Length: 554
Image 1 (cartoon, rainbow, N blue to C red):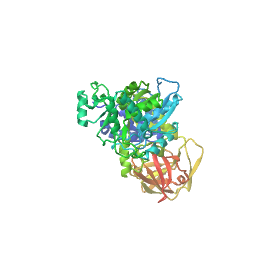
Image 2 (spheres, rainbow, N blue to C red):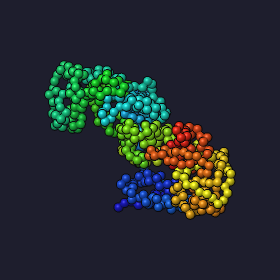
Image 3 (cartoon, one colour):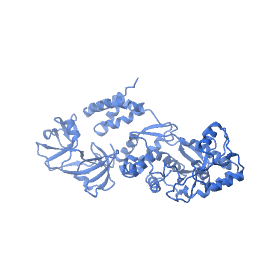
Image 4 (cartoon, helix red, strand yellow):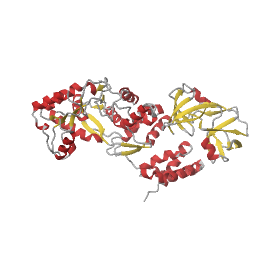
């Protein structure tokens, strides 16, 4: 039996309407996931949400307030975070050292940023050190390194106010160090060069059978290791000797080094033999004196491998703290640096700042503050399981921070011209912000423009033109009264306006008219277009002179 969410929908619709003047369906849907709504049930509740939103928006404010008192209890959301905030970590040294270890396949996005930012927040909590290590071993063809990432990644951390140490460390500069320790582990009889075909080795590992390569003596293994540097790609790999009959077949004799003839974007063709993640990090975590590493649960096997290697060398490594993935609801799909890389270089996306990448750069350009992202991650905390977090949680944090600073302006998308039977004043004075004393002057002409949606939804009906008076909406609108009747729906308008464009998170540009006062905005200023949403201004288009804004959120 499908749960009825109508009470929760009514509660959120009322809360949204009371805060912003009217409720919006898109804001309410993501919140229902915290109450148990499943993705496959969305289609069953879209019409219910729209019906309740329409009902709420038709209510006088007094009725909204009265009803909200009855439904407020349904806003008590079920907790989805096991550990909110930053619980204490085990201290294993006086000076705690954390690492940020991004792979440079593209810009950091809001998903993978979470784990890196957790490391930084904990370093700040304990007054520790943060080391930025660009994890640029060769990677795979499917997950290729891109040169732009070397600047995009530090740029993102700088925006997030992460104080990492200098200089930045690049793993591609440390190959000789990894080779040195590869020889040491071979000398200890704990690694061997395997030239068996992959299919045979896969079968042997599954059955727990040692191959002939594994049985060769240490002297021969060292000779084969040197030969690896002139072998063809795929001809040989260096494997770690573990228990060949280990209960987990994936742990048996894993690869430490492999050969790749792909050119590296930074060191070109200087190296052909590349370490895998667990070996390079086993060495670096020890040499860089890392004390704590917060990483995704998908790296638990690699963590066990690192511990195995530390035991061979008699080292003590850092404390690993594993965190579950977060699934962000309301972003329109799955986040992937590889997918974004494909879309950026194919030209489908307009670079790494395109809002569809959900990169840190794109969020900054939209008007999401660094402080908001930090608070968002801190509130999620060290989740041990995979959790669902609505993107509206971030928007709520950001809205609270920018609401007090964002001045209000009028904007209408897809404008429809109306002419009134009442002469308009030459100008009116309106507060630039509800909580500020300063006023702005709005000049009026003989005609007004309203959004096409408002015109179609309220044609032939009484509406209040915000800050003006009430009319019966039509191409030739009839004046009704000047009384601010709370029962009448308020709509936005522009008189003497100019063309602007707004880039939405979907990558689509919306065209419309904005009031004249927006001409005085400075680049980077965040504003609120009333009854539309918050937007960040990014100057005028150099070709047609139109002002361009990026949509932040409602």
